[in-house]
Length: 120
Image (tube, rainbow, N blue to C red; front, top):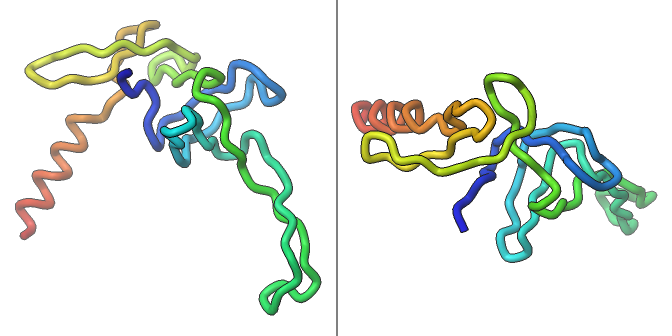
């Protein structure tokens, strides 16, 4: 299965308690087909008393959401979209089904890698 969602993508939650919320993908849990999205599916983590936290406490943190419950945001019209893979110029990249806009900044990534190579 091709990766339709990657770390750093803006996604929309399409089902569940947080339906309609948007956020950036912080982490992928590929073994369980889940993603952690910034500001979505917040749960309390209870902390035991320790030297760092003498009174213990609770912190809010993001819990993973199933991959089927998120959709990438189309960069052109800012709406959720399905993703297809397209080969252009010998490069495979993700493309929005909604508008045909490229979801990858592959040109920018390659330029960045080339620039790093020039610095050395």
